[in-house]
Length: 58
Image (cartoon, rainbow, N blue to C red; front, side, top):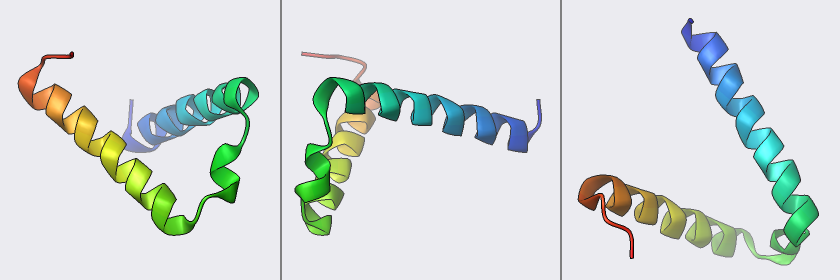
């Protein structure tokens, strides 16, 4: 598999996940300020990083 195919596979996966979550939870993020969305993304990325490093979930 080449880089472009891998990239497209990840994008498709993320898009499908986003659509499913939007159906389940709605689009509350649309009323958030850009800085709030950025903060939420940072928090989630930091959590993922912590889980990767510690390999422990509470």
